[in-house]
Image (cartoon, rainbow, N blue to C red):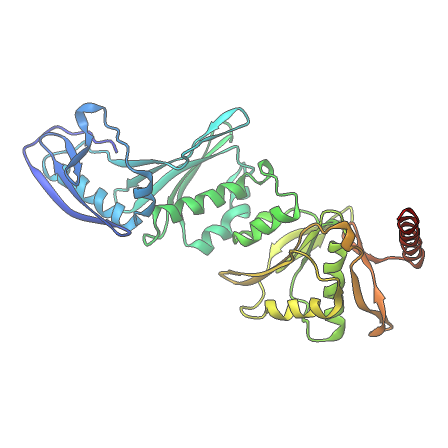
Length: 383
């Protein structure tokens, strides 16, 4: 916090500031140019104008209480004759800063009051992918709308290598809620700098409530998205879903399915993720999807995760299939499509090639059976 003052004779008790279960009393000594917290001076104009405050304490502080405290301190100095008052609270978000691209990444947040009395938080994102206001709006506009955070200003600095943002978040948030929001915002804006090119990484993004961070990606041999749910009531829908999941179980690195994202075909024929289109709230039932797999997939898939994530506009569903032990493969699906119906007299062994599923051929199945027979015979002979 930094304060510039001319000096008057007065002391101001600003009352209590509540943060979580803790209560703090703030006192302003305008004559001495000091601000005290519970009797301990944590700011002194004559000692340079900076102070440190407990990270754990500030994490629990509600933004409305910080606003009230800054208003009180500002008002106390102003009523004592201050005219060149500049007051802000500084907070460094990382206890252990990391080094990225050879530069120290230590995020700082500055809490200020505008002339109209609004609380504004300033911070910066280094090396953002968005280089223009239009790219910024396209990449994170929905994220701001969903979280009810107002953009006061944005400024691209140093040839767009840094983006300074002044934001006005909901005042009922705590500092930790706001820094969590900004961490995810940074993740979206720097997506290429973080390795989310894996099924587990994609699941992390979806579970964090930011499936929009996937937009621009291409469906591949471990990523499949659907605009809407499978329906899962008819036998054909259960069969299709089971085959999609089993194909990932048979793949080397597993896979992930996300329901609630629309794709478009690009010039090379690939399916590109273009829009998040959440499904109707309550239309995705995790137990129904789990039951369909229990009925049809053999053996059960180890470590399977199915989750519904609630967004402002509806729900998305994420099915995560971790890599499976080789001794469990191949995963079979009871039934096969015969004409337009699913016949229970057959079974399928689905695999994935690029963004397409394909069934294992009879020749491949025969080869696997021959190989298994050879191994069994060899083991029995050696025993």
